[in-house]
Length: 212
Image (cartoon, rainbow, N blue to C red; front, side, top):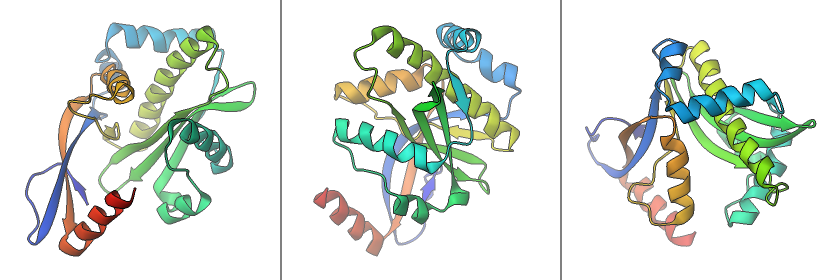
């Protein structure tokens, strides 16, 4: 289980990592003003230019092919309908940026209504515009706008914490450094997370990581 407290349950082992959290309890104006000026300007520009549509109810059938093409390009594990079934449809939500009727950016969130936390599990974008610098720049603005609209949506639904899905502390990999830089542009709070495993499950986790 994930927890933001260091009190370890008895006979459990601990995995320690970090994430960035955005507090959704303040009003929308306060949350937005906490973003750096450049981030606010890019979100406003995306909203003003209206080059894209935001879909806050994206079907799984649109997400899977976009993500799997993204994953193959980066050497990541693929996502299957069985993965979604295992999570449970009530425990996730997918948002997307659409261009000419097709999803080009997707955010896949895990939901914990009891804890009031939404967790960004996956952020993926199409590979079709990699050679178009202007389009990639506009997509960067749209990606920020999608995060902001996601925060507004989850706040309205009663969630109080937007978890950015991890932060690679002291990252040396250029890709991870880029992801860290992007996440920092929303001024989230760096927060330690403690994953607690029973002894038997800890062994399974070690074996699973070894076989990756």
